[in-house]
Length: 283
Image (cartoon, rainbow, N blue to C red):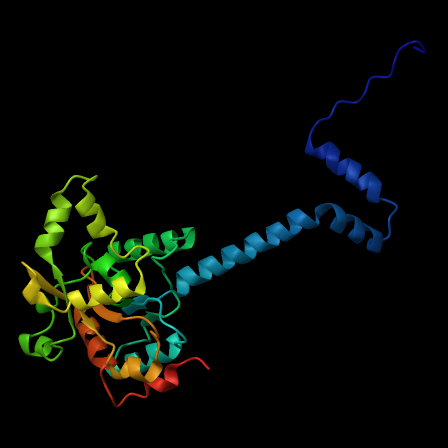
């Protein structure tokens, strides 16, 4: 009837939307249709393509990923070619890289000064990797080494190296005092001495870091000294690469490592004068 208003057609879902789009593009040329599609759908289209690419890469990495036969972290190192070092050590230690991967991380950094969200994330990542038995050997600047060694990250070197092998590094051995660590662990969480013990290297000046590094060379001043690291400042590796300029590098073996023999080989490798370490510096 003429007096009745025409009812608006109800929306019935995606099918109606498709019909509407078909009506709009029915009289367009192919070029105009492409332009129309790109204008209205470029964001979801690009997002979809990106998702497919990301998924493909992730699946490829999962399929082709190799288990590690050695993993070293050289934290805060400077200008090192990780590929060159990995290949060199693989040859030195006769590692099977057909089925496994030798990985030496020279890119990760962590600062205990002006502790940022990045540093916090890096520290948490290191803890997680240690917990999953990834690490074998670690080379850290002395400030970070202190923080990790008093938290149980480093193995007692007497359980890996022979008495004769350890004696070769006399004067360059990094000791922790297990008695002092036990006291700090048993203290209340708000105990000022325990807090100072654990946060000693946070925002420490270079003078404090240097003095602390010297303290850890003297087991005679400790109640229960445990050798957990080797100062490698005078190693051929450091002398030829200058990769820890301005820092005090310390070598340690991860307490969770399942390849401690390889980690011990890496220490010997760093002290091998016949290896052209100078060629492993990024130009």
